[in-house]
Amino acid sequence: MLPGVLLLAGCIPAASAPSRPAPPPASASPEPEPDSYMRQDVMGGDARPTWTLKPVATNARWVGGSLYIVRRGDTLRAIGEMTGVGSEALAMENDLAPPYTLLPGQQLRVPAGLYHRVATGETGIGIAAAYGVDWGEVITINALAEPYILRVGQRLRLPAHAKALPPKAVDVAARAAAFNLDIDDIATGSQPALAESARPTAASAAPTKPVTTAIAAPAAFAGRFQWPLTGKIIAKFGPLAPGKVNDGINIAAATGTPIHAAAPGVVAYAGDQIGVYGGLILINHGGGWVSAYGHAGRIDVQRGQAVKAGDIIGRAGASGQVQSPQLHFQLRKNRIPIDPLKQLPPR
Image (cartoon, helix red, strand yellow):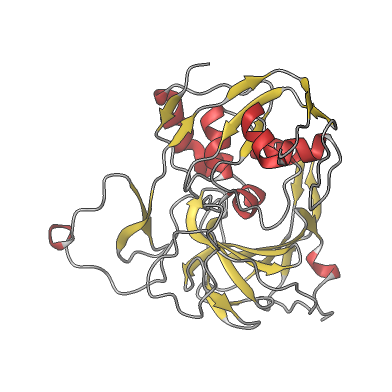
């Protein structure tokens, strides 16, 4: 496989800014960066760059399985670099735990596979799309866990069928991403990779500019959830029809009804680029908990913003693939959809 550079962004789909008055005519607006995603309000408003795209360098190479004999002075990281599989894969393959103490003469199994070296700013979903594979499968074979922040230089093991897509195919994949990505992809694979010594950005109650780096996860969440709005439940959690499952609940709501944060946390995504959900907000509550709010007619928060339980984060609408105004509400714990009715107060 020859390395190449695919111009699919290593970032999440365009994030939506809070709604605001209509912008001046297009002629008066500055030209956007050519390599930046644009974000646009769910209900009109201005369009401006979020963060610059980080092209995914498709540098994956095949590493054959082998045994490595530890020498004096070796470190797990150095061996990972030398073999091309990375320290994470070596630790997992050999059941090693921190502080990863190695002894001269110790035998380490080097797992065979196809490995991609993560570059600055790349994201999991960008890497997966560049090779035409499912991000959830990459999570599984690498045993990735919250907060799902990749590090520059980290080796990600790819599924055996992974193949770098040609530029035209990647362009098609980018245009179709709004329909192919789902809430789990965004919640687990949208954080831009950080340098080893860098720290994620702390959440802010009122970010003054778009947050374009990885965001620090909230402290472990041990509280309760509250209803995001009041209304009739028109679709419950679970099977809807043969082959169709609802991962949350749908609540009828008049257009413009305030949507409230169900618990404190940090906004992980706020945008309208996931076609089926329209205006979508994801809040990371910590402890593996994520809440999702879909079909919003307006979004009033942005990525990286800290919110408290009850804060207004948007307004109900009929965006996405629905015919009437409503809120699609999900709760997920460690990537698994949980019935919200079992977590919300009875009413």
